[in-house]
Length: 296
Image 1 (cartoon, helix red, strand yellow):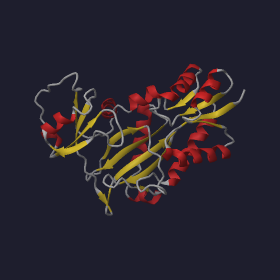
Image 2: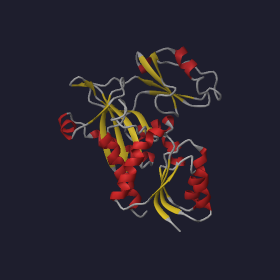
Image 3: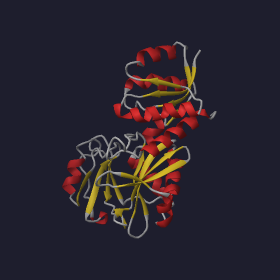
């Protein structure tokens, strides 16, 4: 019976560069890769459940496609390593829950009010937005890529209207964080994490453009805390692979702004202006394959 080191379900066309990087990493690490796409999902799940094939690690890029769910069920039932299993991802991506976890463990986050879902509490008590400052951010507990996020003046009506967009979700109403400037660019960062390794990047919240944070810049500007905070978040959320968003304010405080992103957008910078630097995607692929080769 064929046994593969990694099972990789995927469907998004923009993942193709990452998939090629995983393929190349498998060649370097002498690892075997079993890809599952929508075109092959029926055939491959049938062979999996018939005992004709098996695998050692599930690396899922098919998040949200229910056709891949039987692969997760098989891996769970057979006690197979799953990188970012759904039950852990769902908890980690709950911004309301993670906000409380982070502040309880000494990681700074924006001043926040948590509002019950509209369907549970359609009428809210009087809200005092004054402590949040002149501008606020309103965001649902779940969602990525800015979906459902509203930045506005301190307007209670905007808060009440926004709750209707996802009426079944808890909402966070937060102070708008302003980053300090370092030589003309905002001190705003996305840090990628895979199994103990971190990759800090400059990230512009207006243009969404990335740039690799060099070791020289990290030392010159005193940014080593980015790695330490990300590693602490990893221990708290339980994920093997994610990114986090951290800003450094004028008083030198590091603030976790967007806590945990599991389904990372892996478009590469060589193909998209707001893509992740190619080298970082390559190195994450290498680390993921290396992890899969280690016996659990």
